Each structure stands twice: as C-alpha cells, then as structure tokens.
Image (cartoon, rainbow, N blue to C red; front, side, top):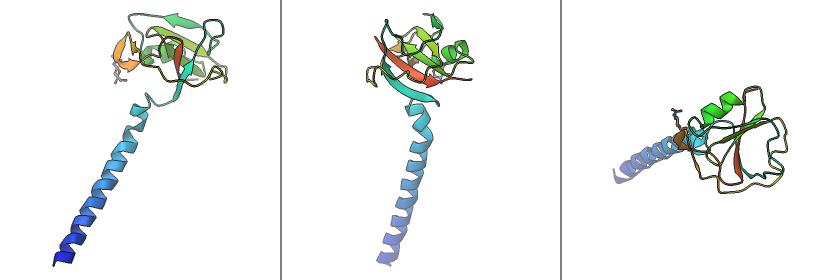
Length: 126
Ligand SMILES: *[C@@H]1O[C@H](CO)[C@@H](O)[C@H](O)[C@H]1NC(C)=O
C-alpha cells in the first residue's frame, strides 16, 4: 500500500517536472529577447558594428520598428534606447560580446534597446 502510494507520487512529480521543463523551453525565445536574437555587443562610433543605414527615433524605437526599418538587411541592431542600425556584415561582433544592453526602448519600455556603446543584434528579415 505505502509503496504503491509512493510510486504514484513519484509519477506525478516526474510529470510535473516534464511540464515545467516544457514550459521553460517554450519561454526561451522570449527570455533571449525575440526569435532571431544574436546577442549584445560592443559598438564604436568610429567603426560601427553594423555598416548599413541607421535611424534614430525617440517615439517609435522598438524591436518591431527597427526590423521594419531594416527590411532586406541580414542584421539589425538596437542601441542607446533610440538608435536602429542595419547591416549585411557578418562581423557585427568583432568588437566583442558584452553585457550591459539594459536600456529600455524609447518606443516600448518592455523591450531593451542596447546601451551606451552596446548594440543588441538580431537576425533581420531578408
Ligand atoms: C512591446 O514589447 C513587448 C515585448 O516584446 C511586445 O509583446 C509588445 O507587442 C510590444 N508593444 C508594441 C506596441 O509594440
């Protein structure tokens, strides 16, 4: 009797663990930022991580706005809360991977938009 009950509790526990793991895996894209998130990198005014056109917008800046602005570019990046950079160069991480992408996007405070000399790079819609 006691052993059977223990086994049942173990089974329920295992199912719960599996459910929790599945839930965590499903949350991963959100935790990493968005699908296509590549990371937080050092950027430099004199040698931009992403070499294409750039936009600055204190009203609209968000992940959605930047990816829309960089349509047909392989990569896009958010920096300093209100800057959006586009690029096709695969060496966007050449200044090094960094922490510090903690500034809120000025167009959507629930997203982060890089930081001072920190760019958050995403795979774009090509
Ligand atoms: C703001 O960002 C969140 C998180 O990425 C997103 O779910 C939401 O749709 C965004 N809101 C707008 C207005 O873009």
